[in-house]
Length: 129
Length: 414
Image 1: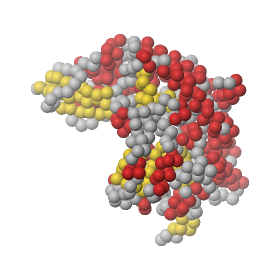
Image 2: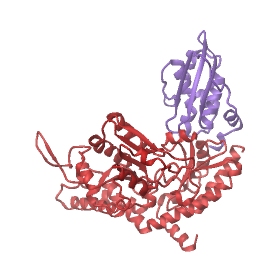
Image 3: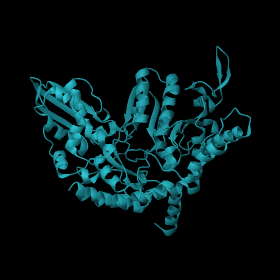
Image 4: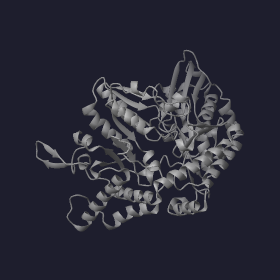
């Protein structure tokens, strides 16, 4: 697990990308991980079915915050319908190996919120699909 | 610590099989999460095995030998609990856990005693299990919830207690806070509650295991606790209630074993305590809980309390070494004011990340909101790390925690 906290993870944790709010977002969702209280909100701007901008806000552990930060970079410019279909792999590719099963929910929280925003209802847990 | 104490701790540790098992990474298991659940001594595990291997039978009905033995052991465990808390066995109701005990009171006592406009007084420190059942009761009845404030150091503020008690029917609060370890001023709150005509429920989930309790001395109307936090198995807990209160309360669950006479139209209920124990009870776990009580009394509750104070003092001293590097300790800093719990955060390392790094070192701590989300919100903490001690912990465990903090500082490049 110690290997997990690599420099770029700590960098995303301490300097999250796309962090903040969007006024009049076209879509948004928020959720919390009931196990630990980590919270994430994601707001989207959508133009012609494409995510033209997005911002996230929240608080929580390095894993939830860094994986959401990296996710926002990965999906900017992506078609909304493609974002709705993202699998857990997109997160696992970002955060790499070494995450323990007990912390997988932390890593997946941002993706769950993104997918919820994309489909307009609460999405399932990506790691359980 | 003096040498004889060390020998006693060594003997205690040897009684807990799990503490001899290394983690999958080959580290010594350093268990600092007894506030979540305690480890179990061999005698408790053996009590479960003995019941299932030697006299597994249902209680109260069978006339054959093993049924009688099971009934004796089950009711014998109730006697042990009753003696441990200085109650009458008829006042000791078996339940699944503290949460179920509080729900039983909220439904059974609450449904007949709380009306629209009544007040229910809690503290801001409460675990969700001593908050949500009262929220539900307030919603059902139109009662008002009030809270005894907690100051920035996690201490009760009783300045306005009498005003808060006006029109109040029930006061419910934790004997010991699971989040901060704060020991509540039980006697004072109960006395003032009674003077105001309110009934007092004390959530003893963290109190009974570490401080013990004399329910008559503190004049508790209800006292609730769980076996698994005091060396017993999961799935068994206790509701203590004063006899007059319990006798006036309607049953919670209904069905078998809690009846005296049933015809197709109506039922006469059984005497206390069985009136509240519908269906086949958790026989094995109740018996093993009795073995846990035996173990605690052999060690001595005074010894346990003193051991935890010394350990907390040592840990607070070691943790203070990290304060210049951003470690922050929450709750009272006087070991006499807390019960084996230290809540803290370390610089910008989230409590979960800290718990993960420590896990790699074999050190088990809890990171999170400790089922006290309103408290965390009020204090402005997203989460805290919590180390909690019990009779089997040692200064070496604290040293392992401290080494883990050094490791976390490296991993997070503090």
